[in-house]
Image (cartoon, rainbow over all chains, first blue to last red):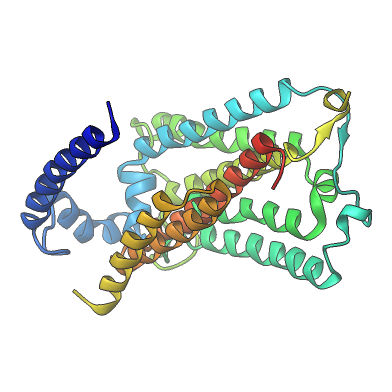
Length: 251
Length: 78
């Protein structure tokens, strides 16, 4: 196919797609005016039934908790896949491209180091804060965990991979990640024994608006935070390890 | 539609197109990160702060970081 025919074909298909899109968007009801029966019901009952002010959290960890369990295991399996591919294929001792205070490290001034490592502490604290307030303010275990794991990148930028590799224990992160994922499933099994239904909220709910409120919601949130936080940190560590060569690859 | 919504929608449209229009992969990762940030602004403006938080961490930090390492690994220069 020559360029001209290709352009004509593109323009015709683009026009067709645009026509369907414009037709569809024009037919949408204005933003915020269309509320499903399910949404209306949840907004009415969630706070009273579960003592959780953030309805999104109540949906994620309770009303649709089973869906979230599946999603957690998608993340868990993906990270397990990365772990297998990246660790099994590389043998030999890691050769750091940038030893601390070595020639490759000179571009990093003391100010950059102090700022980036300080930022890591702030990011980690921010992640814990977002996860802790899941039942009150937006965010929760997933968001908090993802923010917490990002602290790894700040340490990398501030101190380099060698320092990161020495302080972060991959085996510990790996274990904690698995324990977090298992805890979510085990909470489901425990509630099934306690109350007869998988993931049925059967812990004391606490006062609405207090930090540990929502019964199993808060417990599941903690499990998700541990899994996502350690999972993201591990994932970033594994990728950053790719910036180094190993002794075997050097030969 | 409020002014902030218009700004957020336009930013997503312009930056989304910019991701496609950027040819050099390294620049593309940076533009992609900005696109992710504009998406989180849009989610926030549309009253979905939970999604906005996920988008900031995943779309404008984790994915660009992983892409940068992949580029470095495949091109031997960064």
